[in-house]
Length: 177
Image 1 (spheres, one colour):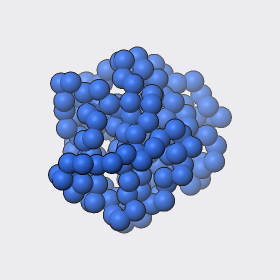
Image 2: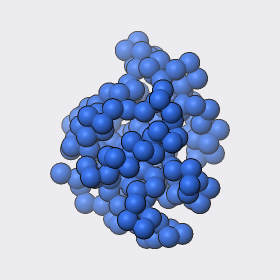
Image 3: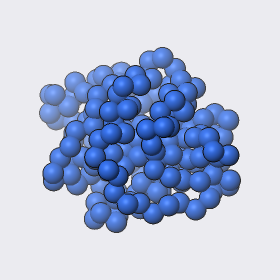
């Protein structure tokens, strides 16, 4: 069951709401548009994530269609979910981990990504969480730096392997809520 979340206000014709199991087809479509075959994750993985009690994922909806999403969950510092991996549950979770954010090209440049990020950060602040983390892929590092994130070293060998599952240009980044 998802924790209660504040509902977002419409943003340029978009409504923010929690991401649901019924949204998986839209998520897979948006993944294919944004990432291509290399980073698209299987249906069963996304279903498992949305069934996880630690997920805190968001959808941006326009005219009843999901046009963007942010898959996130409560985690620990330095823990990286590998590509195609499930969300792990930690009783002492103190980091908001942003696993995947994608915006349909049809609505790109309209502030949807920023609104999703703001909603997730607001939810984290309500829980007393002060830090977020993510893996930057496909040249997105400058975007995340503009959002206040910085590259962080990954010392643990297992976590380095998880990071490597995203390719050579992947970097682990941390930021403030």
